[in-house]
Length: 115
Image (tube, rainbow, N blue to C red; front, side, top):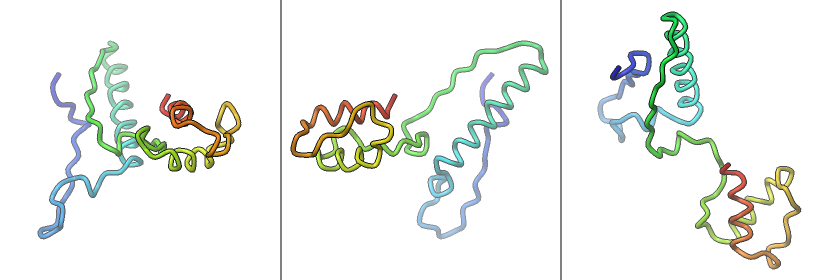
């Protein structure tokens, strides 16, 4: 099938800008809207043709492909704990005091948000 015409977006870049690529134009909200529209257009095309097709979508690890605010697991213990304090309503268990917590336990709690 190749490139899907509905997926093509062109971003004008002003001459002399610091970054002459698309990264200044794309964020996670824009990406989610674009991706949702792409999937909808594929579904509509399939319905019109009366045949459901399988597609392979390949993405890199660009930051705007994710909306997770969870810290990296390699973050410092205090940073993991501070972030988890903002998520206490979503945790499966109460958050213990920082001094009473092991780093790997904090990492396990943060992993919950990656699922």
